[in-house]
Amino acid sequence: MTAKLIKGDEVANKVRMEISAELKDLYEKTDQVPGLAVVIVGENPASLSYVINKEKQSKKLGFNSEVYRLPADASEEKILKVIQQLNEDDKIHGFMVQLPLPEHVDEKVIIDAIDPEKDAEGTHPINMGKLFSDEKGYPACTAYSIMQMIEFTRQPVYGKTAVLIGRSNIVGKPLSLLLLRRNASISICHSYTNDLPEICREADILISASGKPELVRGDWVKPGAIVIDVGVTPVGDKLTGDVAFEEVKEIAGWVSPVPGGVGPITITMLMKNTLEAAELAVGFRNQGVVGFDLAGEEGGYPPKKHIDAFQYIKEKNFHITIHAGEAFGKESIWQAIQICGAHRIGHATRLIEDMVFDKNGNIIALGELAQYILDTRLPLEICLLSNVHTGAVDKIENHPFIKLYKSKFRVFLNTDDRLMSDTTLTKEYLTASELFGINLDDIEKLNINAMKSSFLKHTERLEYIYKIIKPGYQKMRENLLSLKI
Ligand code: NAP
Image (tube, rainbow, N blue to C red; front, side, top):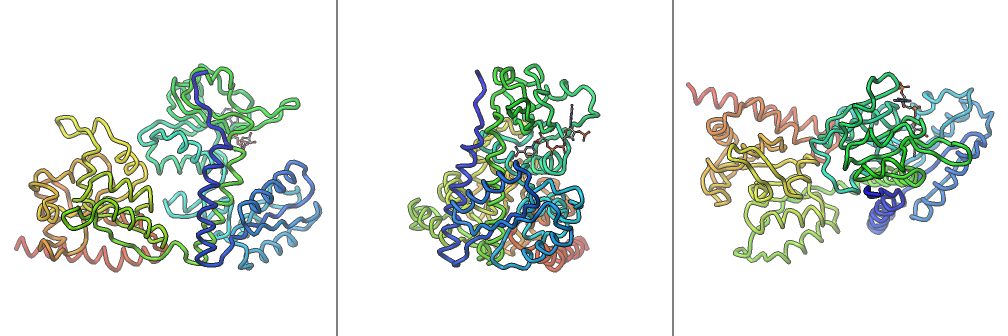
């Protein structure tokens, strides 16, 4: 066997450890216990055992877990009443209705009635729409689980070709959007797709969710590919996946087994969505942003002080913008990301140390940090003239801004007027435009795009865009016009 196994239990354990630490933190600071409820209608044995398992796991992690059992002949109205009650229950932060439902009940009516902010399974149309428009919402649990498996391999996703077999609302469609967010190129295949084996052979990441046992053969797989088998179909007394495991394990770089693959992770992701809903309900991760300048030893800040500060930021649950022009370069950026996360990176001149370029300025290799930043679309907030002023860049012509911009990093110009180096957004823009040939509309788009990284609610974010960023750019257009006159 050449492929490494992606075992669902290992992936789920890793996520459960993160949930457990976060839950403890939430409880200690706010007295809140996240509440997860499941509604089950009828006595379908597979559904019942799944629900019992969910309850067991969530109780073990410290959730307030509730199960609402209704008889198979419960009316749609009765189920809707229970949903209404859960929507209004402050102790319940996330819940789901176990599918399939009896035939007399319209599943769509039931799912639509769930409050999208408590939609732990991420299947409500509002959460689907948020995924589509790149907003923060709850992703469908199965698709979210598959992303955790890909993450577990620690292989880059950026620029890879991903082929998905299956276009259902719970797997193929949401997964395609999650992968797109990570800058993969996607093909979605289904039962009408021509030359499926040929398309699959192109895949660096191949995910099959067709429910057709052993559909994916060894010679469909590109050597070294990541293969994730979502299908679960009973064949005789066994559960069989979509992938001919014995053949594929000799070709792929990574493969997930069935059983023991995606299944164990989905319950964990249900809890992760619920925990996040609980945190949002008490505003737990919304404690403001710390701008953190990674000053160097000359300012009395040895690396240990940075680490102490990162620990403190983590403890307080602040969000952080790192300014990493000087100090200890890319190591400090990595430490900040790993210890307390970061929602944007200022200056970012040091990031260039983690990239290799050819003589035309095109990237030929990225280090782990640069790859991570590119994959996760962390915005890089650049101050061209200030960087020269502080010595982070020797001269403006050598500023890495354009290399980062061309390499699809999410760079944008710092919108502050910076007193220290006597620069303004207009001056910054003129430099970017004269030196690097960038136009104002593109820069405005980059700034607005960078707002997506903020932790503000969608409505507040729009308010900033329309009340601050756009008028700021309008003013700059006027300034530029008066400069020309
Ligand atoms: P679904 O709604 O039935 O969708 C199946 C998809 O596969 C459809 O898009 C279908 O195409 C496509 N398909 C079927 N046969 C194909 C073929 N021969 N070639 C190419 N495409 C084909 O199923 P689902 O709910 O997404 O579930 C899919 C599988 O994943 C099932 O085995 C299910 O049990 C399993 N699953 C597992 C988990 C887990 O936690 N492990 C969670 C969810 C689902 P059309 O659209 O053209 O019909």
